Length: 114
Length: 114
Figure 1: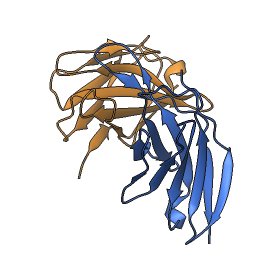
Figure 2: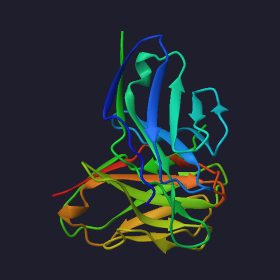
Figure 3: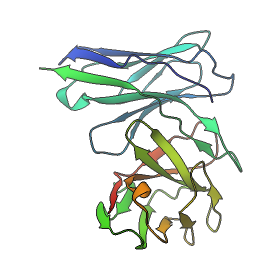
Figure 4: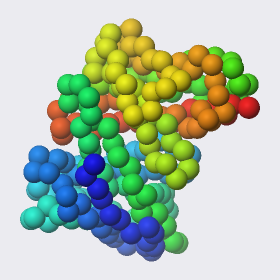
């Protein structure tokens, strides 16, 4: 399984940008990097994904290094509702017809402080 | 925006009882997945489906059965519940098998087996 490494916890002040790093040095050339978050007692929520170019959507930005060995998720203006566990994932192929399972590591527990 | 809906949200069973968890998605997605989440274990794939009428085993399929008779529904059955099946169960769906398609999750079913 391709593995990812994230810091176990981070703090960020409300209104500031939250930058969450992830190392994925064993990623294969055609594997996407996905970011999800899980707010307590809810299902994982998809945030963003990318292959090698930087990506931005209404929730966040994703910066991927040129060698693809690491990436950073940026929440530009963090709010209290962004407090959650954030997971950086490189999916793993399994079984038939390209079905892939998500391998969730321990993630980063992000706390947004007022 | 219903997305992925799981029913029931909570359930308590006695050992040996049977039940079915329902996952419904309204996004016309081809792929559907059942995961379980346990403390310290992350998400583990139970079964998945790559289309209507198809099912396949994931990494922890024992004690569970599934059916995908309709494209929008994916059912997870426990024929004879055991305490080891106490967990939070998440369903996910994905548009296609293309590598750039994210999985979208429901809010989970919290199941306790006494």
